[in-house]
Length: 553
Image 1 (spheres, one colour):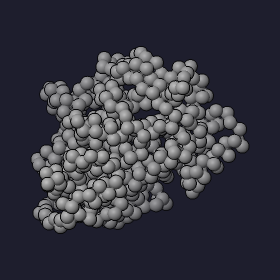
Image 2: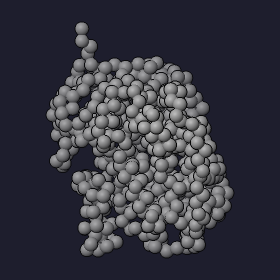
Image 3: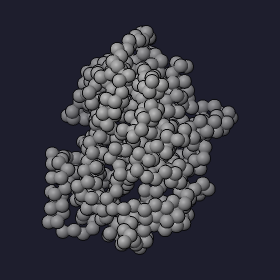
Image 4: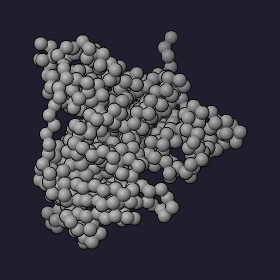
């Protein structure tokens, strides 16, 4: 007897209103109860659009053909109450789903909306909190929570409805590596212990692939691969453009041409025991030359309200000209606040910031705005026009006059935004918004870039291109300071890493020394092979030390 699919899509195609290109093309798939599905693919490949098609309240506006079923019922015929209770969705930005003041109000909100009596609401919240284990947050204001805590509350607010199908759109994009790992581990527990079906779109495949029972890879609105994680990763390996999407550990073993590729650190270390050709290498670390200090923060302390806790406390930091510096650390440690103070957008309560030897607030604001490029972790804060084209063209015209149109066209092509010219910036994906904010910021050719999570929402291929672009700017003398949770990106590209904790910089070193000295806050490759190659941070580092021919000789 054939099982009835939990959710099913038959030959779905979709075009957004006022656009010509298909966002989804001939999609057919069946989802069984209890599956944990990872959606992979590039930015704009259709992952978010596909997820929204499983919940009728979120169906995007446009032209569609094909059929969508939930438990053998056409989606549009699923009762509103059933859809609200049984199909839940968690989005990328933790801020966007929170509507109430406190955690307990947030959890009760949806239950009140469906008319449950207070006794049942209380029972459901109590049971859920016991399962998730965050009793200490229950009466806190949601505005005081860290990014990881906010996303946990978003997940809890969906789970309290007791859903059967859980959809998640890059839920860890704004979380630090440890919070992301905890969040994904909780999803696996929910899947295994509660039997909830999970469909998860995520660029952090290193952590997701080992949890998934099935991987679906999308490209240009189509499903190109669909199967077990090992089968799909092997298929992606055969196509050059998909190779950057493969997580670091399986990528290394595929480069080594090893059968039965591992996905986790433990599996990789067990495989490593079969090889005798990798031995301890004590790499000499090149000392970089001291350069001129272009930006400094001296004894900075900052708090948002007079009686609120200090976000930054007596922080002192120097940034050398032409360096690329990464600020890392948990959500809520002050990275974003420090960037806004360095940019002159906020004033420290104590201490001063100097740029080129001048106090930042004494520099003419027009000059500062032109020469210091700042991109917020919320790129949509930068947008003021109704189309992508206007955002870029109006800024280019302001800077370059009649040449602005040609320059705007070139920049849109450089940032893969040309096909989105007529789209409203707020209708773009998170990665596309990130690229648009970078594009408009770089138009003025700033000599100092202050970037808050610049790779957030970008697929691995675009991330590599952005990394190469930043390196080119660096060679021309641009200084870059970025706050990031993207450990692999920082390990591969930056010159210097600083860790913030309790409002101060507690670690400051070159990437190899910085990450090799960490036990938790390091790359999966370093955790896997640090005994043999203590300074290896990426698969390229390991392969360079031990290429395929050496391994199999």
